[in-house]
Length: 145
Length: 468
Image (cartoon, rainbow over all chains, first blue to last red; front, side, top):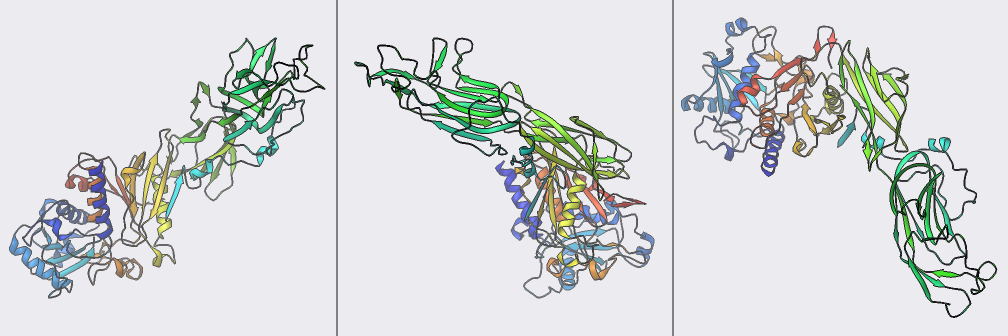
């Protein structure tokens, strides 16, 4: 029971703060893969792309990353994640500031680009910012999720 | 701020608290068999107490202590009558030596039975029902008794027959003086068995055309070997925005086939006290496809949470939108209700610790902003109305972020997993209501990928059918 309460308290805090303390991550690479946030992130991106209203042909034609299902995967390549960190900090205007992030979750969207999220991004509430980039790290979309 | 609702939108649990009702004065059934004018303590006739106590202080064989008139029970009521205290010492008071002042005997509340008479005992009656205690050889005397009765409650210490000693050898009796004096005291308590009105619909949601059966009963139904007195007085059905009408007579079970949503209300006498209970029954034009949504008051809970947080589609609400959480719980009788907790911010908050909520069935929260949708004219996701849909600045973790997506957040999934997974996990599906959809995150112990694959997205409007 105590364990349950403890986990509920943590989850409550997560819901309240919308972020995971860096110490919880326990990873040194720029690539974050730890669960449950890693699985949640990939699943959420896959569900976003499962919307039948998406016109995939038009999205691809206009250079927007598009893929579905297992073609969306969590990146573990530290070189890609390092680029993602840089792109994330630029897009969020954190580059060269104390708020710059050092670790990110990166979802590879088929061969068309990436979605990047960092739990080091701090702020109130439950929403993290997802950034969509093409393969050349040009920002395509920014949305809370 | 926490808003608690039980049994529907308009039936807070406090409704069934046993408040005295003035209507009792109109239906009051007094006991007309009492030849004695009321003396001692007299309670207002319309007051019915759950607990009453009176202390008797016997003084002499020529003085009756009482009758003390307590409540008058207008309806059959299961009560617990207990006498404590004593013992009383009986001393000779007659003027004939050598007994004056000597202890004659030590008695308890029952007094004693001699020559066909009860003497020096506590006597309790409710209406025509004699509780005792001295009842001679027919029934054993009792000082702790449960009984069902109605009418005036009377408590007396009775020396009857007064001063029976009036012999030649004893100078006492009427016109002379008491034969005995007494010390000690007794306290008589009369407690009404606490009982509440339960009203249990077999479902809180009906997919039209459908039927619902609502059962009213006392809780508990049985106690101390008795069936708890219970009588339905009336049922009323009030369609949402409509006029109340009588239904189902005085049956304990009310069967309805409502054509639109409404509130069912029952008035009943539960162990002597009028009580009222109501529940909202939601009629759907189409099944949601989710068995819990189609049967329990989850849609009502979500709607209440949304109303409390500010539906963004209602003009003027844009600035006050907040995330609210809700829980839906059912008690052992099957009666269900919900609790809405205002999380106080538009972007999340601390939900209540669901593990401490008895009978919890599910939980959820609102996303009070129109979600971004796939761009119908190009790539990416867009806001339908950027002027009102964007998350407030306070919720944004990064500059430039516009709206939020049409999915549960990562934090939502982590929250659900923390409750459902692990050795102490409980099965608790989670519902998220945004302005477009009901998002159903499955409960149970499962990997995150399976939980996300099992997400159901139920549009609030399907064709011409507005689910919620």
